[in-house]
Length: 427
Image (cartoon, rainbow, N blue to C red; front, side):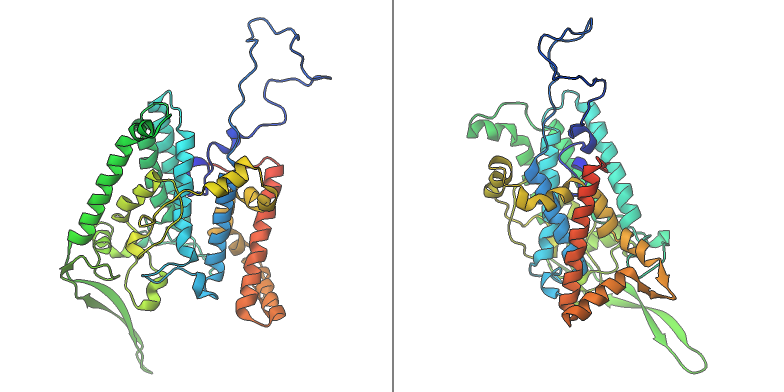
């Protein structure tokens, strides 16, 4: 999805960056064009400068991230060790979102490296961010109910305005604008020149970090209440009553689920009905998921530091308490030494990550397949395949894992087919 999407984006315009077998306006010659071939009148004799090639390491890393996302989303229920940590802690799933942000940060730096027309480039970035936000509302706003639920409907009073794609769209736009307008156009030939080039961005990142920390630890969180549905049934009069439960807070600096400043800001500005309804840490009896406005402040920091890996403390620091360090060994292996064949499946997946994200991660394709069933909704090809593998392995956990691995390989091969046909989806 080029520089805009979730890492599901690429490092440039998908269709524009790939070389075609026959460029527009060229003709087929019996022999390679020689230097002395006469040029048409008024044509420039200089050969057209080739556009920069794709960064293979970024494609591979993007595809690997999408594969891990499918793994943790579809196998996390059977393997809690790779599922998201309920609140405190870190698992494999907790590295997926920071990896997406890292990829988008690098992509933005590559795409906006040279911007002769800053106003036009800013409009282009804004247009991509808007399209990504709208796509996020459609896919993650609650309209699509996912696998095993053959329904498509959403009450606008409960739509989720700030899902993952929506938040990435906002972060991408801010990162793009900072890359376009705040980075000095100076050559980097020393550590001092490097600091001067990105000095304004670093100051901005420090200010945003200080603002976020100040709000998290200094904002007063009062007591609050939420609706709960209680059912009381009798033989003559079954009823469903709506009641309220009060959460006792009245403090500052809490990092727990019910009384942190992030959730307080979300409830005030968005409303409880527009928050995420199915957080993983529901098993800890928490009451809401803090993925909203205040987290945008620290999310934006990740785009300013496109270096990777680290550790995480809790869900308030969902992306930014990662101590990023460079992955020079991985980049050198793929782009410098050209060790690509062992990673070719992930490279294919990374080239068409947006299509795979929409169809697989958002479960459009399995939901479509499940819509064709035999007599009962449970008798469909997707569930039958998973049940078959569980029977072969005599284990629900291992059968589910095998099913998800087959799913990942399927999407890698599907991305390869699209790549061979020259089909790419971008925003």
